[in-house]
Length: 217
Image (cartoon, rainbow, N blue to C red; front, side, top):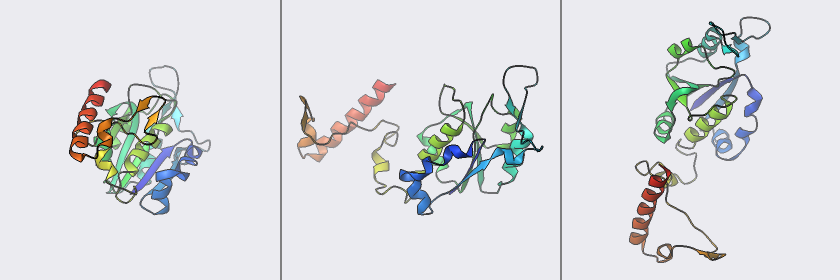
């Protein structure tokens, strides 16, 4: 997969790609990540990428001509473009799985008052992480990238773990997990997990997954 991240703050991404799953995916060439500075596509020498909103109001808005120029610099028949915005479709594991099979993804990280609305005409999807506001789209971009890259075949050491983790079992949360010590300050491990009876353990796990999911909702 080829990932293009458009941002006003390229240095934001230096550290995250040097750890864990993302580092492994990059080193094994299972994914290629390009961090692209939007200011490179400004139409003036000052590198201006935003301007005041028509109709008045506080803040600045990212210009559609600059954004389009940036997108055109990488656009290909395999490219799938995403605009991160509070107004977008709520991101979930189902969307992450659909994105994980794409050949190329372009992610635009918003800033200031967001994007000129006309940019929606040039992207494939508008995504939101939830009903809250961030100071910028860079952290949201990292969430999307991490959740997608780990689904790419070969990235995880044990791909079977994808089958039982949260939101993979019919949309349910994963069942509770326990490890050593068997007893800690009076808190023990459920006896069924110590029984060795895998049929009972499977039933218990399914029941707990359902309970956890209902409790969360």
